[in-house]
Length: 455
Image (cartoon, rainbow, N blue to C red):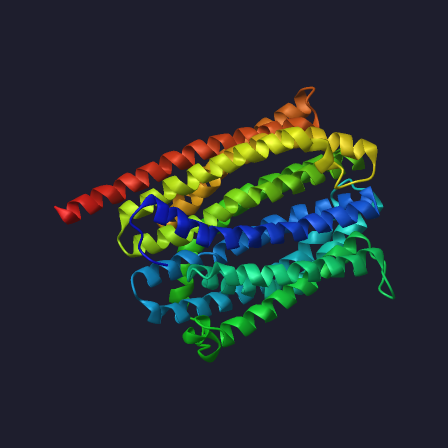
């Protein structure tokens, strides 16, 4: 990355970082889409089983991955401050940390998942698919978490096109494996939704091994000699990683877990409602890749500018990124209004599921408008390494406001299942406002410090 002086230069550099991240995130989201889509084509019961499984897995995966994503602001600020010699140490320590996290998840999952599923009033097929999916995907947790660290390192160097290339390679691999294991093509077993978990686990290993090859042999990553300097564990480095990463992870966890909680609460509804909710939520998650990609781009760019003590440029990038996210959200809102039923038809052949999904998608419009403000703002705050307040605001917005409001509307009014979505929208809107106010406060603090330094 290079210093920029005009908005045109900033927008160009922003796009150079953003576009590969966006393509990467869309490809990752496409994997989730094909899991839901192909399971739904198998049967609505298998789609519901995958929905329950992912509602348990995704909050854990994204929350812990958020901790590991602390590598991005750490490395980007080191690069901005011209302290490249410290990068290898921090990345290697993060890899060790990721392995310990993954092993902890495996142990906890094998103990708790059967208990959780047995406590829910699920149809036998739905329960079996959910348990089989989680058991299958567990085989890929260690490489997935290690890959998260390596990808954060690659992106922090501004080489987001590499992450994009790896993900684009893995997408057709995942889809092909889904076809083999869900539908039992050829001599492969016909596993339905469980097959989606098998395919994902294999894909995680493929992605990890490709990334290992790249950082070992491809410039500029090979210059850091990550695989040649496998030092022992440093609790000091783990403490620094945790100090930044745990608030990021909790913030992501609070947001993803509230959606998962709604899916679990919906287990009291019929299979059709669960399937429609999961289909609409899956597409809303795909739209979420737009603000999420901008969020990740702002973390890299603002981290680099903050590390270089160019606070005016950091503020300009934050304004640019958030404005661009809002514009994109308005465009996607129009698309959803015009083509909601066509989108719903991608997930199911059953007319009643398609009709109900199209109604849920109307609420998804309001999701992504709030996300367009809240998510990039979080990315900007992470670039400043200001992460503690954000996770507290996330808890307040989603769990103190959003979920209780949704529960009240769903249980005590005629809104039914839609009430949960209204509650989520309320929480997201409150979160967007509070995060924006926090960003403005942080920027004023840095501006005052910069003014005092110059005077």
